[in-house]
Length: 238
Image 1 (cartoon, rainbow, N blue to C red):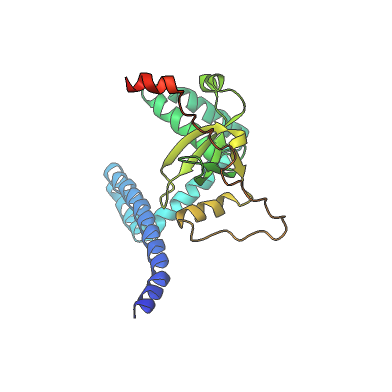
Image 2: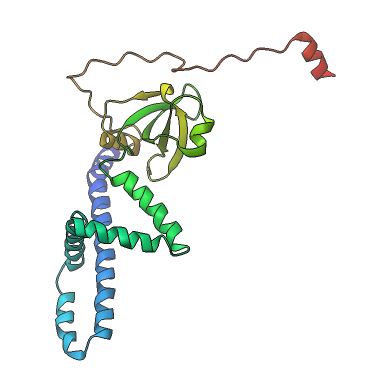
């Protein structure tokens, strides 16, 4: 009985979570679009209320409007006139106190994560964390810069170590490039591996040779701590 219940749960749980997430997203979009329609009714004359009420009855209209708006914005942003207008708007936002701090931070993060020229989340690696000998999957987000880079000797990389099963939170590390191991799995496969807590392992690639086994102590095991000299022990005891 328990086996059948667990089997049924494994079938329905992913579907239920997927439907719940999609319903929440669609509800949010419809709520925003409904607020826009209500605001339009308050501003426009009474003759326009009929068509606006008719728009409320169209199913998934909020999702359709968002998709069309994103497509039109993308077309506008990829031509010369649109790029010039966006640059001018960005300059105006960067001159407004408080707004410039929020806008610039969000823009830097979004450009890093979603730009096709960025390096964020383009490579999955293995790194020893939180101690030597314990390995976890991380994603390279770039290289240290500014004062931080000047304080570090040698080549370092910036890593994002996500938590399990929620990868939206995690830890930011800066480690030597020689202490990370590049993985052949894709970023999507690595995320699935992390979210499933290691249950959904990516399939091995038959076209690639097997990786050599890792040393027992990791890439760079810590040096053993030497015991203090006898006279130092006597001083500490005194």
